[in-house]
Amino acid sequence: MQRQTTTSPLLSLPGAVPAEGPDEGVAAHYGDLFREQRALADGKGFVDLSHRGVVAVTGQDRLAWLHLLLTQHVSDLPPGRATEALILSAHGHIEHALYLVDDGTTTWMHVEPGTQGELIAYLESMKFFYQVDVSDRTGEYAVVHLPAGSIAAVPGDWPVREVPYGRDVFVPRGELEDLARPSPATTLSESSARFFSEVGSPVGVLALEALRIEAHRPRVGLETDHRTIPHELGWLDTAVHLDKGCYRGQETVARVHNLGRPPRRLVFLHLDGSEVKLPGHGTPVRLAADGPDGRPVGTVTSSARHWELGPIALAVIKRNTPVDAALLADGTAASQETVVEP
Image (cartoon, rainbow, N blue to C red; front, top):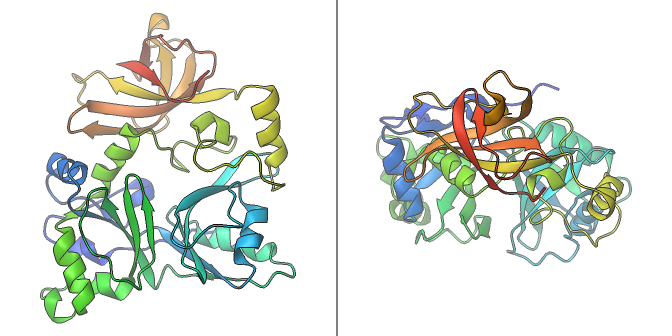
């Protein structure tokens, strides 16, 4: 299935540099990457995530129905409480990560860019007799991320996911388009104009990615491949409820949790700052003791230049790799911090 792509109107703002890879369609930065990172860390600015897919589920059975399909316990999800969940294959491999909130009548979720079509096709195939309606709202709503500490007042009719590291706001896409016009104050509604005046300047996705890597938060398509299971990335803590009923892939989750260990584990890497080039996604990770020609023990999944920590990365490596072993990422020296226990 061909994935849909969305281009942000904020790419027309001065200084906007387009992002590449999975974040194509929004700005990587607006001219000063480290300043933008510091702004987010201080609770200022907003990140345009309008390339992400937005899916809504309505109907009286929506939470009970989603509860049967997702790894998370959502049957009694209170209005306004944010959560995240996974959809797994029959063998327990991660297919989608869903970032959800219910407003009392609709369950809103955002997903990786361009994957909403695949997600909706699966959800539609599982409706059976349940009173639910699934719709792609990407054309109507754009996701904007506010960092923790932001004082911006979100208009009351906009769905919001509030989590410890910030708020994901589902902004009517027309309001985002108005913001990019030469005189936005003449076209934005009063509540929207107040919101965008309070959030401050736009921040690119590279700044948010650096803070995500620092916080060890995995991302589908970067930290995952076709055989990734939740245990390898620490998603058991945030997106999987181990005591809920059956869902697709649940047998694998329970078996690995109760009887075994995952074959791989997520680690955080501090990279040698003297290297100019960051190791990209898929770069082999080797034991430093084996040298640059040694057998790979894993791969880099995400990397960034952090305003305080310098070059950092996430990697997925073999579980039995010693936790104190020095590593190499494409020849770059790396020290590891444990994210998932071996």
